Amino acid sequence: MSDAPQLLHLVIGGRVTDPRGTEFQDLKDIHTVGFFPDFESAEEAWRGWAQRTVDDAEMKYVIVHLHKLLEPDLPGA
Image (cartoon, rainbow, N blue to C red; front, side, top):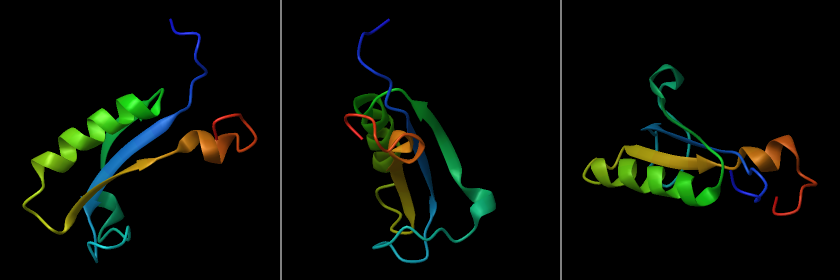
């Protein structure tokens, strides 16, 4: 187990209404990739899924920094 504090991240993806934004077409169809304890592991998962769908301009995967929402006063948030 690492001594680094857990900085929870979520990776999700789905079809967006505009590739420049993050408004999803249908919230029921959002793909939850998973929850990750740090940015590095979340970025690795995000990169894998984003690369799988690179030819589909309407598909977008994002990293949500849950630690910033849950504990905004934490160092690193």
